[in-house]
Image (tube, rainbow, N blue to C red; front, side, top):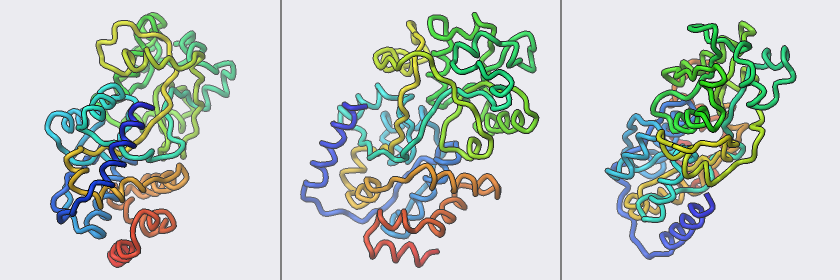
Length: 333
């Protein structure tokens, strides 16, 4: 990501130093990606851009891979608020270098991805500390559809992390098939979360991918496995995260999670006021964890989460806006 960050910094620097008269905000399209923290952030951006900057915002459904592909090929949507860049790192670097995409500052401090087992499984088998430890015991994590094999819960189709997970489970890497594990596509983020909750409540074994910050890991503590190997950036960038056709996967530690806001360059250049807001917009794990817990406990949607955040955490969001913009948002509360 260093190349991406250097290119982005230079682009933004030149963008904000270029004399320009900002046109009225006009219409903005924002990707509302299909997991809770992204749904919350898309709605938060909608409220702030409409109330503080007078934009007319349309939220469009999205997911990491499909949204980024659309931004590359069609220049739409204008903004992807919460892009987990590990799944598209090579393509994103190329798009930034080409000048098609601008990537903002790091969005969430402390975000991470990895493979977890349920606390109950770790308590029963404390010797399970690494991925290889778990792969040696498929019988301890049975697939309910095929109890003679183990189950690994991966990412739903369309998520960028599905590519990395599936490649890491190929022969040459951790080899799910050879170790007696089936890779389960849960079908949706909600189904993946439900599988963790069910396992926690029933004290059943569970093995799979998840990320934080999430309400799920806030409510249902899990044990994060050590990869047992260092991160191999070359193999990750050029194979593991590149495409489903990765031909030379190796055991690898997950790349340090990078969560950024991606914006099409055309939009960024014509909307400097929006970019000033996006460049300041960042928060910690504790803040987003509080919002996600509220959403989960109250069956609230992303819009509800946005209004909750604005009311509960003014000490955070007022730092992103001018005093005049702050008053406009407060008047809408």
